[in-house]
Image (tube, rainbow over the protein chains, first blue to last red):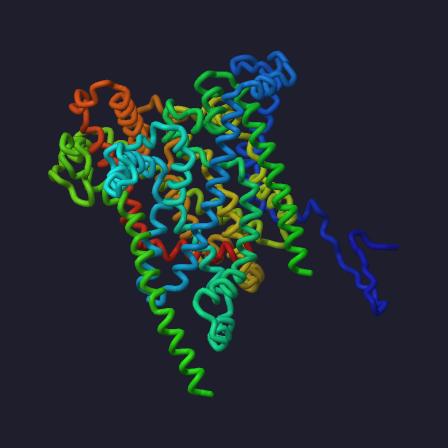
Length: 322
Length: 305
């Protein structure tokens, strides 16, 4: 007769090994200290990250938070129909995508260029100083950055003075008061804040390139730019592809704080993103169901983008492995 | 033959030698573009308020004045905001570091039966985002955290990203550390606290830096939950309020027919600059000393990230 909890496995050389399986409940008890260190955190994220998803059902109701949840009237997809019949919401989607796309392109081109330039600096001290300065804005809050931006973009601010003195314009431009500039201002300010920081990962990738490649290229008489195009850029290609694919998953994330802080009413048609739309209708106007419907739309599009990005990343990885 | 190679090499050096100069100039220009707006704001904050309205201040105040700082520090609210900001930053950082590392330790133990389940639940939080309004309803209505200091602490105790970089770091430590301590009869909590936690200091310094900067810089939770509670306002929120008032004034100037008549109301420009400087100063001052930590931390994250 077999003893309790003893299992056996037959090895390839036909020997049989027996081992004891500790019952699941006993293992749980043995690991009670590990559970103490992790189960409360699991409950924490269940409450703060998963439980709010339950609130999505109110998008299909005419929700009034004062009433018990299920005594609210069900309205089907009426809130979504309302959203998509509203030009303001369509504009918010357009603005979100536009600003996210500008950030995506700027966020690749400039940090890679900066990393290439930094990589060519021979003096370590100079390189470090440039890095220290360019990383700094990443640590400033959006409130501070918008405060600074309002100062230098004012009609008598530094940017207007520069453009006037160069003769590019004849009258000061009201950068923050005209919608057509807004997307590009957000792109430019984001670039100012994050360019240095985003170059770190490319610098790390460049540091990992085998120096022997450069030495060999030197022997063959390759110039600086030849080496850049044929060694450095191919060397960071895999980092670039992975980041590109991942960032496509964030095409619904245009940022929130900068648009919220910098978008005045006069430029609202260009500055309002889906998040700000949801905030306005949800919290200011108390139309929770409609705001949640807008949030659901954004989340669903984001998840679809992310899953397809991950799928593509996996495919690409397999290709490079083969 | 040898000579021709040398010659070729030498001509290369000569041909390439302008590039470092162009590169250096480009980098100096970049440093200038990065620093100019910051220095300009500092200069304006030290300038006389009425004079600042004329615009045209560059890197140095035209009419030096400490008036804006005096005005700000004469108001009690700034001290209170400083206290609230420091308190929330400290508590949030300590809680995050302890809870994140504890969880990261538990999830680094390969024999832990719930390891897979809990790890998956945490990683999925990067995809699951209920959105702004459901979170607001949870915190404000279900939990009733609004209008209290705890709204700064409770919803921000853990971050999945920080947990993953810490766990990666713990997994890189030798297993023998844990095994030998366990043979000596140490329990997991003792083991974590006495062995693993002290060893995690490099990565936890990075986590602490990220959390502290985020806490110091946050204003939206004040705006959403504590706007009506003046004694719970944070530094960044005070600045945000100032931004809003100066923006409205700028609009008024824009739309008014006679722009010159509104120039009496102008100290807000220098006050805004001064609050910007005050709320950014701690980060700018501490930042150079912390630089090595975030670079180390990012590298740890990228090893297995």
